[in-house]
Image (cartoon, helix red, strand yellow):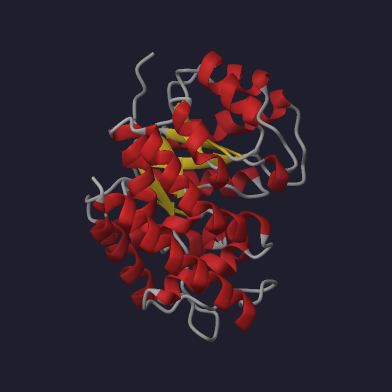
Amino acid sequence: MTPIFNFDGIYTPLVTPYNADGSVHWDGLADVIEYLIAAGVHGLITGGSTGENYAQTVAERIEIAQFTKDRINGRLPLVVGTGTMLTDDSIALAVAAKDMGADSILLASPPYAVPTDRENALNALAIDRAADLPIMLYNYPHRTGTMMGEEFLDRVGRSRNFCGIKESSGDINRVHLLARDYPHIQLGCGMDDQALEFFAWGAPFWVCGGSNFLPHEHVALYNACVVEGDFAKGRRIMSAMMPLMRVLEQGGKFIQTIKHGVTMNGIDASVVRSPLKALNKDDKRELEQVVRVLKRTIADIQAEG
């Protein structure tokens, strides 16, 4: 089955810069969008967990998505996140995405409810009917408490709109399952420290929070593995990125770390909404050191051709 939308490349789940009072810093968001477009990422996502969707109202999320859509102005595809606890809220976000002309929606399992595969599929199909847009599924059971199992995938696969999945379970067996048994659902990396393995299994896209502040380096890994098919080069780039993956995936401060990375690039995104708190001096120093070494190493690899 030919997908109705191709998710190819690096998709950046946008951070949301805030002012000191917690309001959205619109100029900062515009700067992030322009920086990423200039750096060559392939798509942008609003309303994901990296954007602190859990700390935003539905109205705020729609406003952020609309602002992003207007700012992109057709230069890149826009995926609008619809994940919420309430189905009606997810449908409202999906309808808004359709009305604003978004290219796709990101659809996650509702957290805490722990629905069965059948219940989860019926919920997803209801959102699908409301939007009638290409859908990137988001399987992150560690956050939602629910795995998108085989019955779920079989049921939603009857709609052509379900054409991609950001797989964030961390279970390499899921990569094998999706690549072998569900080839009509494009496989996307959603677990940064497994990017090389995803690409080896044919994943055409990577949703990576770190690309908010290191887009060139993430694009470099994608190009080496997917565009050039040079996995020897890809392994070297991935090896250089692993210290960053350790900081992001195992440090317990994923969003704060990414937002400080954006701030390091000259766009103030350091403010986070409650219950999170900004990084301390030691955390900042560690990230800055990791980034310096990573950039230098990957630049040297790239210079070799």
